[in-house]
Image (tube, rainbow, N blue to C red; front, side, top):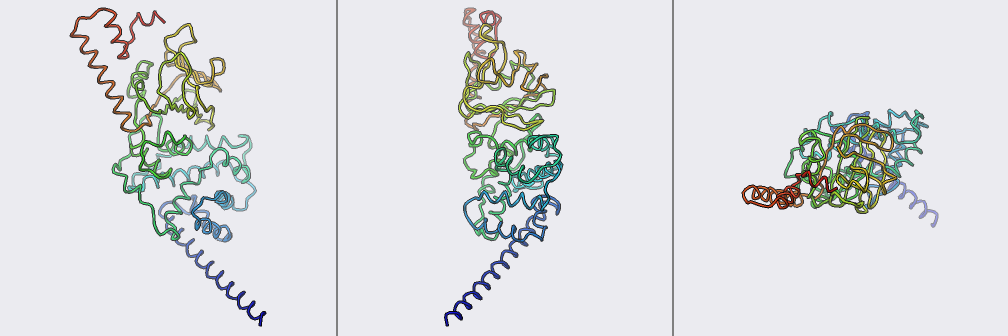
Length: 415
């Protein structure tokens, strides 16, 4: 009697497992249908579901999605499927993976009007820089273990956008999050005519401290933050060297007085691109400044975090006895990673030197910070206008002009 009961339970369990497998197969087919309009069969992530030989991994993805917690196992499964039992793949294939991930995420960030996405938004130099940061560049092949170890340290959120998409669109999730759709009142992409482009926004969204991604409090995840930046709700364009003029005076005029975190992109003529993030008010100072969330990133030709932490920024264009004139990034004057001279023309960095080709500055404080800076400028302009109508002493005139960013000869001589 006991054996019959045991056999009955086994049959029942087997039937339950069979039903579960059928359900998983159905979900996989639905995922493929939903992905088909977003990418081609040979592009990630759709390509990994067309590999019918590894149903176990596909089913495991569904099991992970059924949990509300994110799993460290998820990226390893995707890596396994993308490598598809190969011991290694070419660096070109890895670069393609980065490109596909970026394209997929940008399409999600533009979901309210996906027709805005254009393939020319994809910057291959970014994807090459990521690939160049994996292992030894002379090694033409990359193993799944090598990629997994690199990703764990350098880019743990690479598959974040795809996982969020799966959780939102899977039939396992009956209550889709539409916060992004509701909050996206401005559906036009911001104008980016200098260094920043959608691809760099994709990369920076996943690598910057949350402080630089918090101005739009309607966002609940990184894809929504990416969307907010793209649609001009998160960052304000403070300075563009192509638009506003490339000089120290123009740089100072446009960013001084902005009392919120800023992101500065420095493009160098020798092919290097750096991103300086400052969580402190940017200023001229005899001392190093910057808080614990300040950092310097090298974006290309090899992506890497160069420096992080407090007191890494020093700007001196007047104090001749303190140091050389210019902008210096480093913890002290003898160990700097990026130096821009006082004329804002020549640059020395950890790998070489060149001229400053472009500067692009974005404020991460939201509308309030931009309005406060605008009010300060208007007040300064009014003071300058008043000085033209009221007879003042030379010292008073000089003080007002210096306050407005117009440096007098006497002020230079004093330093």
